[in-house]
Length: 271
Ligand SMILES: [Zn+2]
Figure 1 (cartoon, rainbow, N blue to C red):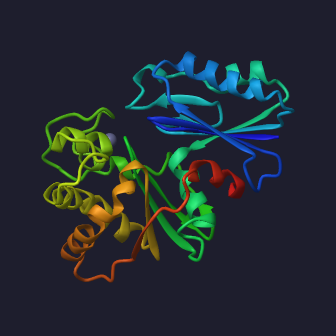
Figure 2 (cartoon, rainbow, N blue to C red):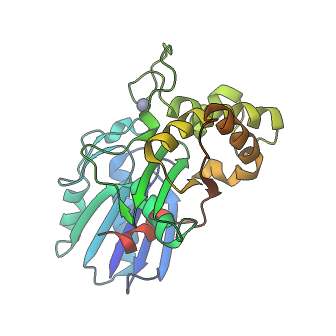
C-alpha cells in the first residue's frame, strides 16, 4: 500500500491507495502548529489502518530539503523549522521508502494530468490558499528546478517596507494569499461577497499572475486553493486587469481547479 500525505497550512490529507490509480480512503484533519503533534497524528492514522505499507509520499509547503526530509523554513509554521519528517516516520515504518516534494508542485501535476489541465501540455498552476504556491507543468512533468519554484515570493511591490512572514518584503503572497486577504480587507475570502473587495483583490492577483504568464507562457492557467472556491467572484475582474497589464499578449485560458485533492492525486503521475 502507498500512503500519500498532503500537509497544507490549514488542512492535512492522508490518502491510502492499493493500485496507485485511486484512493481507497482519504482522511483529512487540521494541520497542527506543533510538529510532534502532527507526526503523532500521521502515525496514529496510518497505524489504525494497520496495513502493509511500502511507500509514503509527502507533499508539504515551505522550503524543504527533499533528500533529507527536512523543513528548512515555512513562514506559516515557524516551529517546524529544521524538523525532519523522515526520521520519526522511518522509526514507525522501517520497511517503507519515502519521498518529499513541494505541495504546490504535486497539486499542479495532479491538475495537469487528471484535472482542469488534462488536455494541455503547458499547464501553469497557481494555488491561492493561506499561502501561495504554483508550478509550471511541461508535458505532464514538473519543471526541473534548482532551489524551488516559488511564485509566492516574487516581489510585486518594490517599495514595500513591511516584512512578510517569509522574511522578505513585497512578496506576491503578502498581497494575494488568503492570509493577506483577511489582513487587507478585514474579512475572510470565504465569507466575502462584496463585489468591490473582490475587484480590489483581483487587481492584486493580476500583478503576480501577469508575471507568471509572461515567464511561463502557459496554454492555460489553473487556479486552485481555498480562495479559488470563490473563483466566480473574481475571474471577470481578474481577466480585465490582466488585459490592462498585458495588452500586447493574448492571455491564456484561466480555469478553476477541478480536483478536491490534487495534492494527493498528483503523486500517481509523479516520476
Ligand atoms: Zn515571500
